Length: 266
Length: 337
Image (cartoon, rainbow over all chains, first blue to last red; front, side, top):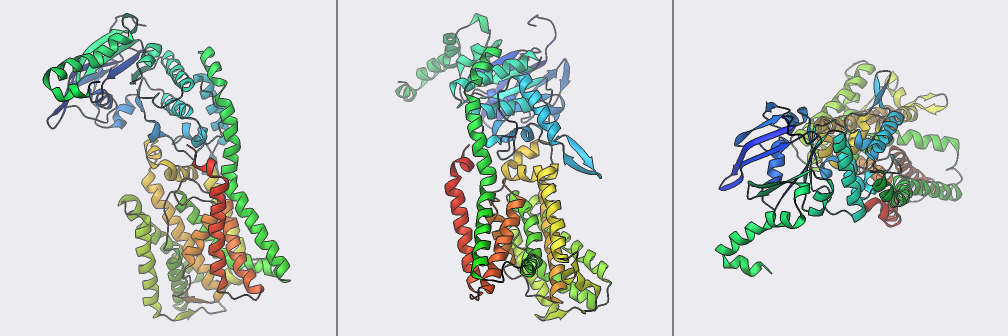
């Protein structure tokens, strides 16, 4: 899978984006192979989220090119990215609390049966398909009739990921999917990410939880102040090195300039 | 993979089972409590007055509460999207007067009925446009509607009530009996059955609930949420218009003063039934029970020879107590996240 062929699922090159005086992205590149899990890390404001928004069509870059499966694309809206099978998981923006699990997974594309030309929900088929989908992805939820508001944070996150995965994406972008979850639930979500990537979906995982990276990622890309600073195969690096890549330079650069920041160090 | 999911599986199902119970309580708790209230109210009036629990009186209640039931069913959709429609009482008055005027002008009654429904739909569409597409809060838009539409009705009639010819077939809509049941009650039953199916069994009902819970999620799912939002106001406008027609037919006249405070009765019935004013949670069954409770209180107090002015006091108190009990008993379930 990791052969160095030309089979790049995503190839972003020379992406730049400027907001007023702030160069949020400066000549950033990103490559992603089919079925690969790429960890995108960096401090707050390093440009990870902006980069993922460029790929999901929510932000239009000032310059740079995006290729998907070797074809140049230009996204002017999230709908364009979706059409190119790039999905982004937004937990809080994709679930309806008072609707049940099956309803959330099938929101907007419910199985229907027509009685006298009137569309009715085909609840039985919807719940059966939901059960299949959950089992296939290893998501543990007792009853597909549960309302999402009664699920735990990890289960909600799993539903959001499962929903995105069910659109048969080729790239799935997740921004902090494991933030604020209990330990066992982090495991379940990471397991789900592995299950999704095993099905050939390329995943970009943005997270501050460095230990998660070592559990699921194949590769890590470190960003710093809008630039790529490093890229490591997961087997060739360690948490210490990644921490240094994220924080270290900033440390030196800032403390050399301003004593005010030094005061804030300890 | 199997190892981990099995390991994780050990704890979530417990939580899930637990929340199944809570979910059932939350889903049905409000309906259960309004059902209890309804039964208590009925039992009390049966004991206090001899004439309450008689077939003619019960049929009279459903006949009189038909407009309330019909509009409350539509209002359940509106409130479940997180909106409100304060203009229903005024639309009722306008359509009641206009149907009397139109009949006096010699228009055939089917045309009048269809025309009034179309007028209600048009008013709802106009208000829905401002709410859904122009993003003006529903409270403001329909408050303006309440004032303007009532004003139009007053302007047309000069404040007088306009009689309907008692020989016209039109009055049958409000007065006739069919299979031993008053026609307005049958009409309400049909509307409620359709509303129940639409709310619980169709994609439209699902999106109405979804819009109230998280409109952005529904929009991202590719649903035209703005049109859906507009459409619920079309429904409430049409429901209010049909209520106006039924009222004019039953009373044999159209008065621009009818339906004063009707919107508050409707909202009370819906909220009493367990539909959340914040949106995302609605129940047609609860609305039916809520509307019948409001109707029974009014009827029972009169039969018990109490002052009719007690009705609003008792209704208001019951609304507060019922919703307070809901909050207390099922707080954990409804507010958990």
